[in-house]
Length: 517
Ligand code: NDP
Image (cartoon, rainbow, N blue to C red; front, side, top):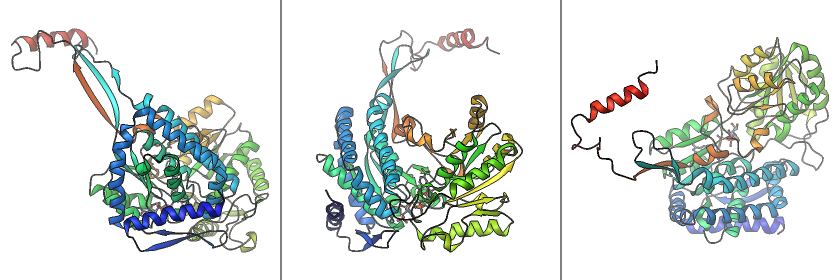
């Protein structure tokens, strides 16, 4: 299918939803590279969101009734559909988000891999199993299973419009739930494409995965409707609003929020590899990556070499919209002001701006930010304390890795981070003590590509986990069952128990546990 036909499908899909909901208000999504209109989408109001969730409730029952094998087969069909149309979807991501086609392919690849893992591991992780009954219930069999919650609302950002929401969607579906997804108003076409693809690949349960489009008010409606759990990915500020709205209906929430991730470069690190990873971690996707590297703490032993290497590598980067560009424009023009403010604050506080900065000649057009490296930034500067979400990197000289860790951890966020060191034990020790949900050693962002590993933050980076077994369990409720196998002559939980039973029990407990001091 050509991109034009595909956009027709997307627009038809969205138009179909408009008709079904009688919503009249619409909004345009535009390409950040050219300003051209990518698509026109309905603003779903609360009534329309409610109708969509009601359809999802019916679909959730059909979906759950398919069982593990039925769901796995359909999730495989969906993943196959995405894999076969990867270039078409990547073109759409490029148009709507502005990132290079190759980066979009990488993003979709990760999403497909997570879909495969979630579908393949759902039964083993969540299915009915026996657990040990323990001493007091030795005559009972004990069972545990993780049951689907029903309908999961997913609210996602625009920076990785496929990979990020799919971290919730794939795991929620694999766990047996239906999903209603509200994409960012900056990437509704990608969201609508994903839902249209579901209907094409899984025609017998089309409403198990639906999309509602609109702005923040549509997301707020999804919180109020309510759903059985709300999986939110976005900024900490919006996350707080979502939690407050969900509190009204006691709807549980999963919060995947922003970060201010740090890299530690130790004395014995491979400096060239560390610089390469820092530049990719900070600048790829225009720095608009929740787990992007925003701060580097390099020890005195390697600082000068590291700065020289990063500076040399950054000079080879070229923001732009053609096939040769290393990263695209800022997806949201309003983000440019935040990035400029952080750079200007740092410069005013005495930081050295070694590349990029706010020089308008360093970028191909308005809407782009030049790759910017800041040295000697005071620790209380906004470039250190707030999420910048642009192609910037601060590099700070520290005495040793211990000081680096202390500074890395001195943040209200705690999403991810990286450690570069040649010593496995040293690196693992630093990684384990880093206050973050994920850390990669001698690379950046790798944990996101390992489906078995949970993904999520601490502090203002949120709570709850997507990906891996924890990600599957996140969209379930644990169900405990006991079944009496044989009746004992003495039943302690009966008014008919003999008077001496409690004394006998106390004696047994004394023999079993009383010797422990
Ligand atoms: P926002 O917080 O601005 O928006 C996130 C989503 O929430 C969007 O779909 C938005 O809709 C919606 N929304 C806005 N207001 C409300 C409301 N009152 N109630 C319900 N939903 C609402 O984040 P961005 O889209 O700007 O994304 C960037 C942020 O996401 C960064 O902080 C980044 O670090 C974080 N992020 C975290 C990830 C993680 O896994 N931890 C992964 C990727 C990004 P609309 O766009 O239509 O306003």
